[in-house]
Image 1 (cartoon, rainbow, N blue to C red):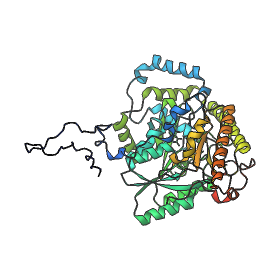
Image 2 (cartoon, protein in one colour):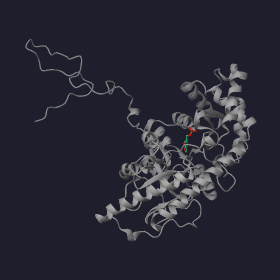
Image 3 (cartoon, rainbow, N blue to C red):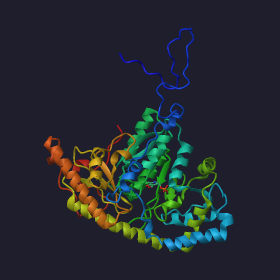
Image 4 (cartoon, helix red, strand yellow):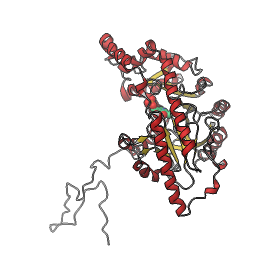
Length: 473
Ligand SMILES: Cc1ncc(COP(=O)(O)O)c(C=O)c1O
């Protein structure tokens, strides 16, 4: 019979010795890999490497076409101009730019942030309502620290931004996904989930939503639904966290009006310069009602004292002196071309049964595999064929999403995208062949896919699978 292993955290005791006293070994007989394993806080147990970071070593290999990472095309920036601007900031204003600053962030930058938000209809924000953060990722973390206790419920689209799920997990929140379709989050489903939470006695702290060019789904919340969601928030006393890093990256239209522009009290808005300027500077912000804002400043002071001065000055100077609106236009033209290369290749090459969204802004296409295929299991074969994507499972808190994958078109050149999609289509075909060998695929279930004329943002494919994800079980 196998002997019982010593329990973790207890020094291993040998049987009583001849002289009658137990002897305690100072070192366990089976030393653990991590000697501090028993001491970590409970909140670390849910922490895991994201599907995206796990892929980093693979996607940096030159032979691999990466449709995985969401890295902005920073080489399209005027790098020399940005370089001299930052150099001048240090040589001319070193006393401020290399010094500690305010916990809430540089006042000049906060003014300019209000100008940026005005482009999305937020015209009533004052610089004193803005808290500058280290990317919107820190904004997410601060908001979660301020609102969420372990066991609280956070509502989030299914699928959801992987970095937000990581923050919620670290806070020991319970995430309930709300389904989306090609018009974004479904208001009726949100109401249904809220009613269920009410019936269960769950403490719902907020709804986390990415209304524009969703990461990873690529869809955008329709205008009528924006009002419907704000109305639901009012009726159900729901706080909404609107995460909007891609809002100015629409391809064919003016920016959508933010949820925050419709309700200043119920919506906390997260913004970022990562996609419109540079992710490496790590500058984002939170716009929140006064009482929330005060707590956010206390939380940020406890966490980082103040956001970095130099990068804040750099962003403020960039907005003051460089043609940033034209630069955003240039970015969107470049991303539109890459989106087109992606959709044209998918339309031409993907086998029947594969469906995908048609984004009209942002970085991502959300692809659904033919019935029976699993993007996580298929991943090693794809990497072997020199193409990388992010498996859908990373975008759900409940382990679902295996039939989906996220494709990013923001970084590779159009030719690389076409080659990457060609390789991916081949991998899927081989996978399908394998499945049909075992009679696992009902190919008759699906109608033709990749209809080129389909409206932007539409999830194409089987009538029965228009929803990206069902409600949480
Ligand atoms: C939806 C969403 N929110 C937040 C972030 C984090 O961005 P930042 O670089 O501003 O921290 C990202 C980054 O990809 C994102 O896609």
